[in-house]
Image (tube, rainbow, N blue to C red):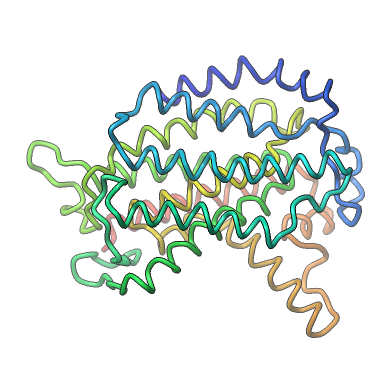
Length: 341
């Protein structure tokens, strides 16, 4: 019902939102150093992620158990990161500059919001058992987990959260490229959360699968479903050629939500596999910058790596669909890890 609610809200409300964005001239500012073909996207309505976030929030308030602290913290990070992205998008539009909010301030607020969420998690406000245990894919959690000291776990978890948020944002460069893997990841986390937190007739699924057991995690399946529904409704209008872009308001927020889901379900390491597409995009940027500064040469024709394939001659839809296919394969690998332990 959460997924259905979110998808109906987005399908119905995106047409009037797109018209309003056009009236207010909230159009995309295209990078001057980007692929030439992208200049045609100049002026396409952006900040469409606002409606995804509103749909997710409304669906959660309607269908979630509101006594679940985990739901509130997920909404806090999602909407908080959405505010950061909104201001970033607003600056790009107001000053007609693709740079937007300075990176240092973007990171400052991401770390601040993420840090307070993790502090609340540690303090018990999430309603989940706080654990500094790190589990590993394909290894039984009851035998091969690693328990970190709190002072080491919190920075690690914060890096997972902020890193995932920015990786999704970097991926959001082609029509539908980011939202496809976001939907796939949310669906995977829906299964992972259910498995980690559900006991059926005294049958503990987590114990049977030998994964970390997280009491109360099953409630997060509703939040995941809301993201899936909102993402599908958005994709209807964001599919190539896009009628609207999500902007940083959507990408930073959805990435933050996925990062916090990885932490709450104790799948911080597994998320590196599940989010392999996002990770590859982020690493391509890091390698490109490092290589150029140290040697003056570029590894890729352009970073993030999806632009590299565009400049190699791949049509945009081919890049998008192949990245989706890779994301599905990685999600299947992440789910296979539940049983192969």
